[in-house]
Length: 80
Image (cartoon, rainbow, N blue to C red; front, side):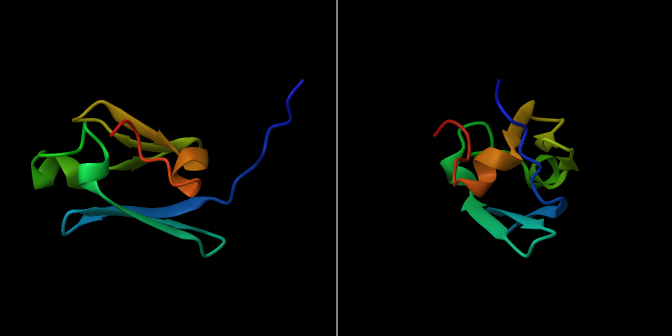
């Protein structure tokens, strides 16, 4: 049986100048270029800016893309 790891809360996720910026309550910040994710690459700024924060990750409803907090904190930004 695996243990559930409770990660610090995500407090902010924004698109800015070709990058996604994600901030966590413990002070960790993750930043990556949209070019690192095939579903984000080349998309309109209005779609990239609409990010929903959930308990397990962040979601772009207009792009049907989800990235987990565990993955983001481990520098995994989706499929290249």
